[in-house]
Length: 293
Image 1 (cartoon, helix red, strand yellow):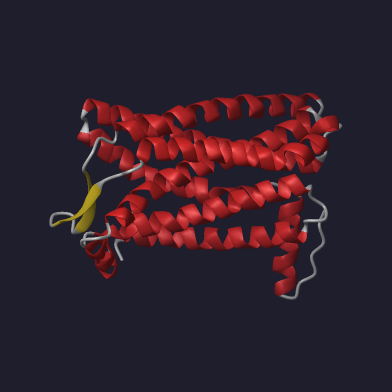
Image 2 (cartoon, rainbow, N blue to C red):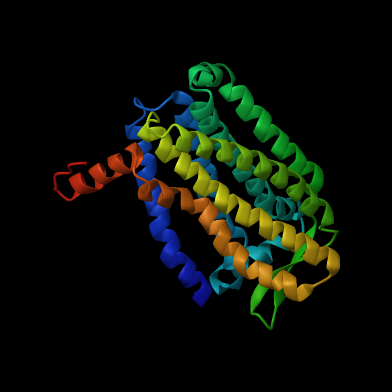
């Protein structure tokens, strides 16, 4: 494997396994968590883990000889539709991750700002809101990205396959920014209000809500970093600055990993019920009694 892929695997695999531990812990706590929060969290986990897996399949294995067969097959006659699907996958997960971040933030917002109406609201509107938010995101994605025509060409200099677009990338870049920035602004305002309420009423706030809100803020920060790089990439494309595009592409794999796998780390770092349950599982698996403070 190339050095960069080895580095990404060295931190990615432990973070992936940590996420699995977090999922097991969340499921173990299902009776203590609200149904809406449980499903919002699990959907976010599913999207994030699938996104991480897809980045390896669609991007990072381009330089690995054992994966060259895939690109050779993808360029064979009769699989044009598959190439389009391959190109669309990255955009689909970009939209899905932003939608999940919005849903998680919205759930925390109502829990802290409108605690009296929180349970009733999510009991009535959780699934309609999920369908609406993800439906809008997929609609924008397919409207701006489909069909996505491109060829995979082997570069003798880099010794890796590269994607050569056969049509302008501007529409799908604009679509991603047009969706990502409003979502970012909404999440920023909601998290800001949550911070204000947590600080102002810190004595009466439930520790569980505080820990979940900190996780939401961490997710927002990585979401902002990814969207910022997307905006920079768009301006580089408009301006024809290839050096700028190369620089951005150097950082995006890492910010993508942080957005995909970061929530597991935040959950384990922030004191709260999920971390407590995860530590119980780890301690019991090695035969040590766990006593939480």
